Length: 351
Image (cartoon, rainbow, N blue to C red):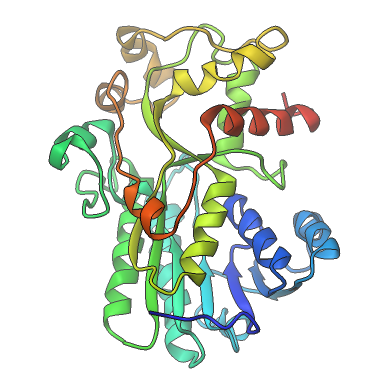
């Protein structure tokens, strides 16, 4: 049982990120002092959405310059903090050198932050943003899991440097975190493992994979159809709240699958039809799997035949009962998540 003193500052790494923004908002609205670790504290444009929240919230935000790959760079930001949120990690899938662009920042960055926790006597709890990618690579992994459902006990064993390197990076980084936690006894570790995160971005101009995907749904890229590619989905606001609760619930422990709905890409897109279908070229039907097998690799190099075979027309299933029971989280409806996210793109003229 770890009780966190709310009068002490709380560190958030990667504070300008998609999920981190909603976490910072909740912390500030709860009157806390947030130590926001960012790459460049002088980049006013990147910090504008956080400053806007801080202006009207009872809490305070202080910025610290920090770099995932620079040893000791989180020391100043972590000073006096009992609670550390490590949300900073690369999430992009178009990479030339996965070892350098994904594995090293994820694993070494995690080790760097946790080593600072080892050196900072005030730290009692670290909450790490992991991913369902540390649990599975493909929907076929769900079928191979016990009872055909992913749980917190399952680890990804199918990703590699050559196949799904992003999933591989998240698996190695989370394993590194648990390894370092076990080597000491002062701070405990909780991991949040979200599936595909959607919902309104506080900073709509951030280059998140979620925003890029939604643009493709609305700009006509998928007009001919969307793949019935199995996935979990969760609202970004719920992921922010899950982090908050993981930090301040004394009994929180272990991993938490943070997935609201077992769904697929087509069904996600169809939720937008009623409200936006008349004005935007949204997909209405499924792209046949055989067609994807032919054109997929040409359209997107990630759509290898192996990937299509393992994910299209294959159901994704995860058990979210642990986070609902232990942290008391209630997830937003899928339609609300999709509509709120799409509306942000419209308001900012991004579709």
